[in-house]
Structure formats: C-alpha cells, structure tokens
Picture 1 (cartoon, one colour):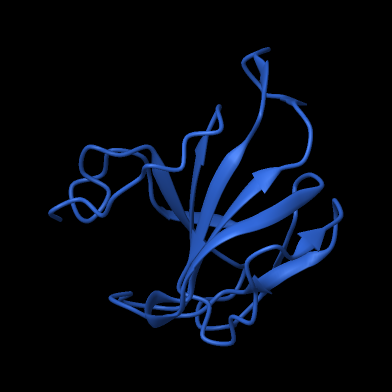
Picture 2 (cartoon, rainbow, N blue to C red; picture 1 turned 45 degrees about the vertical axis):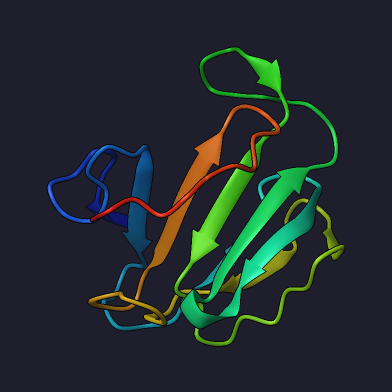
Length: 123
C-alpha cells in the first residue's frame, strides 16, 4: 500500500486528516476491507463515497477507545447501502477513480467519535 496524498496535503486534503492510498501496482482496483464491525450510515453514489461507523468502541493507535466513523471514496463499483452491516475483514469496496479523483485509489478519513457532520472542503 502506498500513500499518494497524506493528511493536510497541499491538494484536496488541505485542512483535513485524510489519506489517499493505492496498491502495489498503480492503476489496479485493489479491494479494501473493514477494519472493524461496522454499519453503513451514509452514501454518496456520485463520488463512490460511503460513511461507515463501528458498531462498538475500538482502540485507536493513539490509545483512545471510542467509536470510529470513517469515510471511503472513489469506488467505481460502490454498492453499499444505508443500514448494511459488515464484519471486520469483509470487503468494503474497490479502489477506483469515481468523482473528482485523478487516479485509481481509495480515499479514507477517520474520526475518533460518532461525528457524522463532515462536509466537503473547498479544495
């Protein structure tokens, strides 16, 4: 996995804590998987974007224990639906370039909370 744009990057991630990742070989629509048992709470089909939330509190790398709310984007084959429950390790989707993406990748951003008020930034 390669990070092609990191958090607070100089392009579309300016001001946000998000990462764009691609697989070992650029241009391949690699699958990506649920990091924890989760439920789909929002979808934005025009961008292949889905907001997921952990069913239970999880331990984050910084030691905090809280709910995880995370967004994935750019999946050309996105078929998630609100209320869908996935188990840790289930495939969530495939890297893609739907929306305003410049190449095949998965955009992911995570909140250590149940916050669902995210909005698209001006970049």
